Image (cartoon, rainbow, N blue to C red; front, side, top):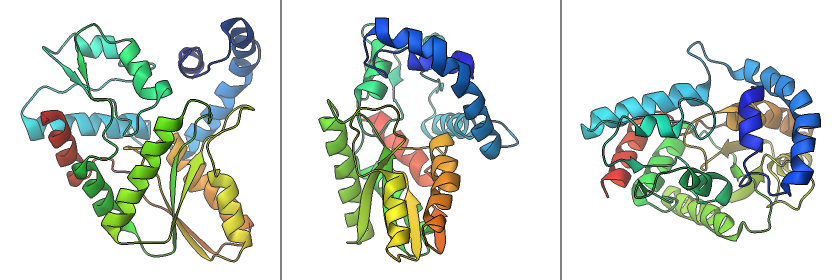
Length: 271
């Protein structure tokens, strides 16, 4: 955990503070406390096969290979298996960052480490197959209640394109589901900068206090369940909503290894 966080949080795309200011804080404070806290959270969501993100990503790669008949390798931006290692096994690769909405801290960070000439898909936030897969997944699991669409948060400065693409995804998903009442929020705040809002946790607290009895949360910016969905929303978000007065909370699963999502990925990479 410490090694992963050291690589992740040292990326200038992720934390844009001056290196002379941030690196002493990272190594002197953050890496001495955050790994243990993160490990406690991971322990609450761990699957028998391992980390949910790794488990579902491996399944996605295997099923996409079966669907397309092409060699597929999965990789992690930080940690292992690494992107450079995965690329060694592929000829004329197409890289699909599994971030539907483009952001400098995610998609651009992947582009930073790709060799010249490697093709990369920048985003697919409005791709019809992705929206259709989202809609099918929500419809399959939804039981009723106020629908909250929670996207990963970013510092507001410089995130205009990302915010636009998140809200466009939400609009297209709502239209596909034929619903008018929903709320778009942003989660995972960190640090003291102004972040995109409204915040997911504050919104859940507000809904509970206002007497909204049932809430369902979907996370369209994540194509696989992970710490940010299962723990931050499924556990902490649930506690926040119920403690504020809500009665029923439901986290809808991410796309994971659903058939619609595997077909959607195939369409996206074929293009």
